[in-house]
Length: 208
Image 1 (cartoon, rainbow, N blue to C red):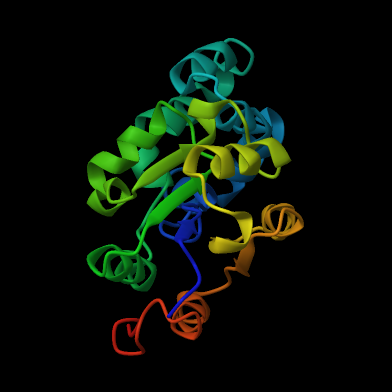
Image 2 (cartoon, helix red, strand yellow):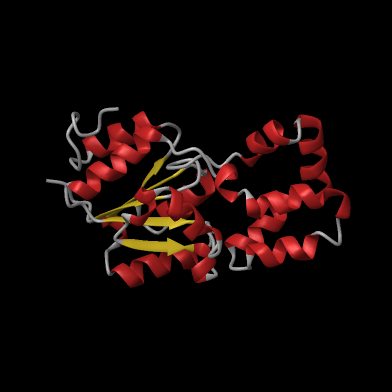
């Protein structure tokens, strides 16, 4: 029997792809996208969204600074569900299998408080977590140790009973430093194998 009491999923590049460059390449072309990303430093500004700022307000504040990119900036909000897409099917099946089996499942994600509900509206599986630890709501972001401490205190689960997967090595290292069980996500099959090894799913339940 597994000693794990809760499985914790990151979302971006674990359950849904987060490669907004792909959307802009399709929409405005690679050259325009490269200029837009470089000139506006949009990824840096997006970190403020993960930390609790309003996504629409951030876009409104950037448009006067970069009027030549107004259309692209508006897309960051208006086309959110095209940017944070598509779902990663095998990962979704793993999440659903855990939930259906009665395993406690959380999410710990760097995600804005405005746009997380937008993603939940189009991806029903994002509503299946027992607890949602969303950075934009908490105003704490990974890999700040405080966000991991919050999960421990709120859930009441000992660090070594938590199994966490994330695609970023720095986020995994911060969790491991607190004694969490961790898995650096590279592809769904590796995560499936870990869940089987932990006794949380059978090989059949974890299959693609």
